[in-house]
Length: 190
Image 1: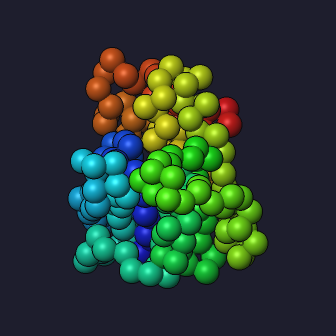
Image 2 (image 1 turned 90 degrees about the horizontal axis):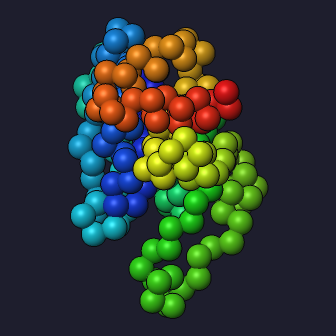
């Protein structure tokens, strides 16, 4: 059976490393893996999405509406924007950070209130945490992506945490490995 993970954010936000890490990890576990390129407006601070699909045999990286097992989101509004892609029993793993889109910045709109509560009220399983604070605790705000990967790893009982750590060691430049391992552990609640 194929599993589907969407990584969504604003302006890239580390989605390249997150998708690279997932792809590498899943390949080492014997899965067939397809990872899309980053789609969206990453150069202009717009919405971006990356698809990671894995299973016994995967033919395309594209995830259609209603097919995502997980949506990993770098901020709440992006999670809400892509919620229609989630399977009925899927889960959103989201950083509670709020990044104002252009209409909010210009004063034409307000950032929606209580997005996590609204998604949960609609029956969506949401795992929301302040990944930015944990990334800063690890040593860099840029490690939000790895905090999110740590949190996501809690839902993959079949893949031991040490396999995730090994993938970090193999995908992250050496001078940033310890920082990212700490971010991963904090995301796992260790």
